[in-house]
Length: 104
Image: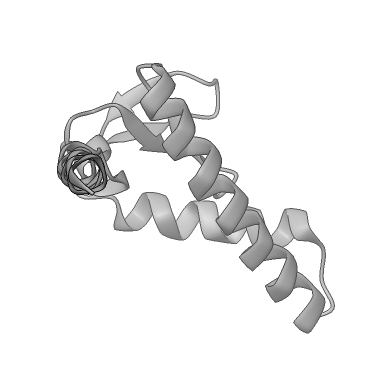
């Protein structure tokens, strides 16, 4: 029983330390891309995991939007990328057309 409590406490404490998307963006680790997805500005296993998770969810959403509007995924991604970059707060990273990262 004691090991179960220790396991729960350890698991909960790790979730407090876990990095989320907004924190990663504020720290300059993740930025918005023109294709509507996020990218790793500074790569690490934790950052890459966040990027993969967010992009998987975004792509599913974009595919649903494209299907409902009878348009291509590329069109939805392009528009989402423009909107996401426009909404990115000053000081966070965006990816330029040439693939380089710059602070907005």
